Length: 144
Image (cartoon, rainbow, N blue to C red; front, side, top):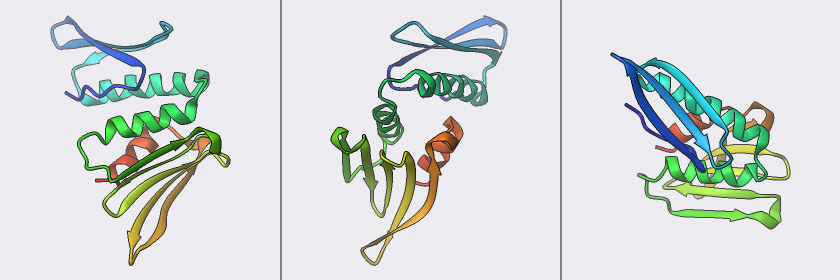
């Protein structure tokens, strides 16, 4: 079972009856995202998606949250470069071999790039209002 969490959120999984689980994510302010369902990765992902949506609506530093989330999800990869720049509208960069994610804070765009012949090429660009838990997860899969 996938037990990924979100930065600043704790995950609790309780079996409330045979094969039925309650997945609860709670942030430091007590806000909760909760799903009751069978014990599948989809159940956990659905709860993570709800919590992601809450965070996106209420976060005082959304760009930093997104950066921390991507670092957390890439913790098993060899990160060759990472930087977060609060002075540049919260822009950031995470790079693994020949691939990187950029968040352009001023434009609020998440960009997936690959490197070829020492040049970076855009694969995907997504605007902040289109960012969901699923789209970020898809971007992170491209980093592997």
